[in-house]
Amino acid sequence: MNGAESLVRTLVGGGVDVTFTNPGTSEMHFVAALDRVDGMRCVLCLFEGVATGAADGYARMAGKPAATLLHLGPGLGNALANVHNAKKAHSPMINVVGDHAIAHKRYDSPLTSDIETLARPMSHWVRTGASSMTVAMDGCDAIVEARRAPGRIATLILPADTAWGEGCGAIAVPPQRGRAKVDEASVRDAATVAKLGPGTMLLIGDAGLRGGALAWASRISAKTGCRLMAPGANARVERGAGRVSIGRVPYPVEQALALLADVKHLVLVGAPPPVAFFAYPGKPSVTTPPGCAISTLAEVGEDIADALVRLADAVGATKTAPVFAKARTPALPTDQTLDPATIGAVVGALIPEGAIICDESVTTGRAFFATTEGAPPHDWLQLTGGAIGEGMPMAVGAAIACPDRKVINLEADGSAMYTVQALWTQAREKLNVLTIIWANRAYRILRNELAAVGAENPGRKAHDMLSLDNPAIDWVSLARGMGVDACRVTTSDAFAKAMKAGLAETGPYLIEVVI
Image: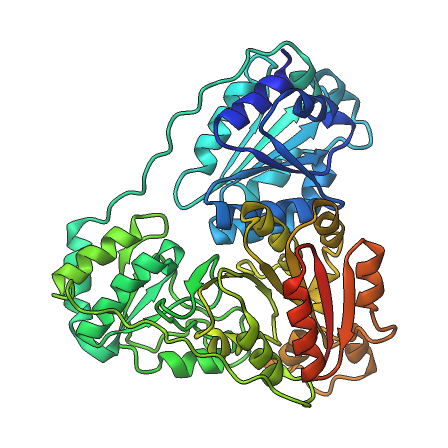
């Protein structure tokens, strides 16, 4: 048994049973080992950013890491934007990056690079395999690191000779550790603040946005009068009718400042303090008001559900009923032009129970939370790190993690072009994904940002840098060219009809919504 097979057997034995791959010559022994080891699903991606984005989506829904297989430094470089997004989402991920054989590195052949230096800014743990006899233990350590709460990025660099040389066999991976409990002093302090009522806000993130934890937060809110809010972007929110509805801090600085203006005490529950996405001339970077006292109940990665249960007990809310969203869907708009309001109504009316929403709407979907809160129970996954090109790959990973659930990808046209190759993987794997493209034929968010940063009198050059309409992208042709059936719609009636048809499909389908 060679090192590559020892590594693959260790991964499978440790519960890592999906690999998103874009391999090259240096990874061929790993590829061959995949045929000799049962239990590993291999998903080919035509761009490395699709592989890492898919691993992110998979981890968010499966609750465990997938592996990626990447080709040397340039392959890792192509993958890094969605590794960044996964890191911000606290998704566990194991990147296996092939490298030249150790003896070959000194010749500085064209693909030679410093892979460790490339990997470190986006990884929590980086190691280069030193021997075929130890690479299985490296894989075991990578699994342990990736599974550390709340989820970490582990990058294992695999020189070709550590893969083809004699291996030691599989290494048993130790059980995963549970999340650390919050200390009692933090619970007491949070209870004191929560009892102050409406001037207090609990900002909840991480695992606090799952159903059970949110129900305890709702009890606390109902008992004390404190407010609940989530950060602007979250890895996964369980929401819909029969679940607790929670709003998000808005992206525009002015809206965030207005929302938080009367908050005197902010308690962080698995969330960072709210700040502006960018710096803007004459506008604050911190969106809490001056004098707002900020304290922490639970850090990201701690046992948030347990902390909220204990906080509920401390404020006397254990028997208080949580407030759940009622079943409520907007009426389907008829014979109307397509804009964010009519689009949101159609989406809110048609989301099926158990759907997984992969949201990279950027500008079009900012108000979708309001129109979908009463839809049947569903999960909402967002772009967390701001590096566009996450939505389509994230849908791939979510669909593989949950093959019995419908995945709906709400996707901006400009963002989609970064990782359009994901459509090919959806077709190849016959994934149950409905992709809806918001075709405003512009980097609309950047047009807004042009004004927000105070850039005055933009002319033709500035306009052209933010436009996608010369030529217009033909999403129907692109999708069909990659094996995904598609249609184009321009009215609310046509969109509703197309969405119903797409939801009825069991394989991938794409709708281009022209705005």
